[in-house]
Length: 185
Image 1: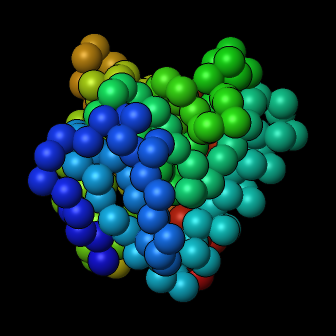
Image 2: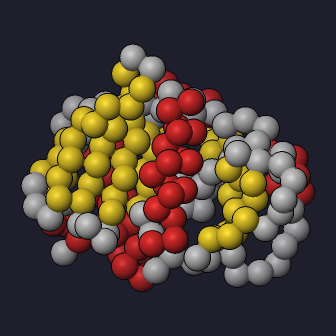
């Protein structure tokens, strides 16, 4: 379950100075410091499967690097989300620092939890659109579905969608396809 823990707009510097010793993760979304509890076991299973399949493709084709949560993606003074999976191409490798990813990566994937539906589908998607992140994935365990959005002409368009069964392909990574049963089975 996630909750907003402050009322004032938080900045990147506030976020970096945060010194809290608890069992939560934090991300900065539109100036709000959002507290997140650990993901569910099912979330972690799906995340692990997706990371292994995706990173194997990226690594075998030497396309860049793949990271999984928690990793900060610093977009501006008031936004440092922690996507479930992030891809940074070789062309953007300068974005990768010891503190996280500084700037918009090539691909962001979110695995929707019951407590994160609005944040993932609306807040984070709007943020990725604002920063023109080329591809945005939504993986929904409750509906056993995967949606892929690609950024074109100033907006996200549905590039691929599969529910319960089917194979989807990335819009920015020719050759990467995924049978969604491998994620949810």
